[in-house]
Amino acid sequence: MITLTINNKEISVPEGTTVLNAALQNGIEIPHLCYHPKLKIRGTCRICLVEIEGMRKLETACSMVVKDDMVVSTNNEKVEKARSGVLEFLLINHPLNCPVCDQAGDCDLQRYARKYGRDHSRYIEGKRDFPEHDIGGGLVRNMNLCVACTRCIRFARDILGVEEYGSFYRGNDQQIGIYGGGELKNAMQGCMVDVCPVGALTSKDFRFKKRVWFLDQKPSICLKCAKGCNTFVEVDDNKIYRIVPRENLDINDVWMCDIGRRAYLDMDDKEPVTSSMMKSGDKLFDVSLERAIEELAVEIKERQENGSFALIIGTGASIEEMASALLIASDNIGPEQISLTTRIEDITEEKEAGNFLIDEDFSPNTAGAKKLGISDNSKNIESAIESKKITGALFVGCEIFDSALPDTLIKKLKKLKFAAAITDRITPEITKYMDIVVPAPHWSQKSGTYINSQGNAQRIEAAVTITNGVSSSKVFADLAAELNKTSVDYVKFEKEIEKRVAGN
Image 1: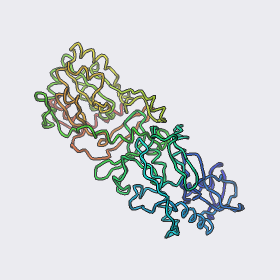
Image 2: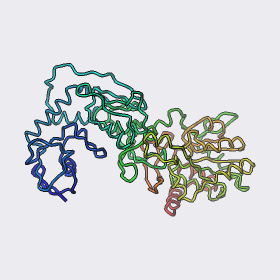
Image 3: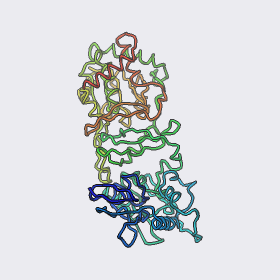
Image 4: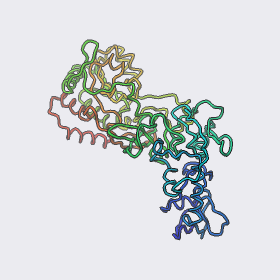
């Protein structure tokens, strides 16, 4: 450990710590723009200048390593004058349009200018002016706001290993751009927005939709693959506006890929299931939940004696939802008629584009299903459907598929006499093949446990309230009561779920 003094406060930090980190770890603020804890040190913004006793000039706190008995001042007159001067230079070309800037409220430069800057500008000359530029993918670049911190460049080069973004020209002509022109190709462009300390890079999905101070951050996890990246779902008035990474050093560090960021858009081209439906002719019509559950129970009962009803469990379901499905199956559907269904994708292109987080298993809870003893029996079930030994099926938690149904089973559905789904979305396949549809909450509306590919069990809570008013546990409890011709007991059913989950 190294002992030093910062602002007359004696502190001890591990050897190799920088002055900036030593200060931040002990609650002493030193402003910084180019420094980011996950990126290589550059020392270009100069706003972190501090005075160190015995040194002729001010030094950058981000690059200066602590030494025993070092005496540092971060707030004396000399430092404050230099810091104010650096801010004045940074704002020479930076437009003072915070009220109409999309980054307002989430901008480090705005915060530092208010706290450490001058109360007026002495610069009367014309500012440089660049047009906004759509640089492809999901980003818009505004060079008028850029402070040349190079965080975006260092992220693409050092974290992703993708050489596509760099700095061009010098001085007043300096620009940040794509080598050879064209568009950004990397798979984690949203992280470039995250590391930008100003509004030079913004996301097209979020631009000018909501001020950040209105957003409520709900901790969650990404369900787009088995990695289970930790996230914040940012919500206002029961509407999701964006998804950003939440730090977890064991899983995703502070990053996430663009596939996960766009997860909240998964219903944009799908019709949500807002009520129970039954087919009459070729069309689905709204019915009460009680009627749908009653008819579903009849269909299961009719086929249970000869083992001709299958339960297909997709790993978009939480462990609790899977346990609920197994409870209704225990007395009514044989184990050979129950199957897990997963989604494996070719991630070669994503890896080449720098996506170091993605997992080839696009099913978020495969490990959770296996923990409950659910195996992939889909080949046998497909054969049984083909030979007409299975004539009915119920699909649960299959929202991981773009079609909301397992791709391999879609071709077999026309051979079934009866099919039902508990799902949150309506797709052409659902409309064409399902006889009963029961609403399930969207992933953002439910709480539950998921186990990622590393074996980490992670609990999520609902980020928004359920719009259709139906939870999965209620649906399964009602169905279990109808199958067994008993009165429904939600408390007992929940305890049975907890017991089954805990037992595995």
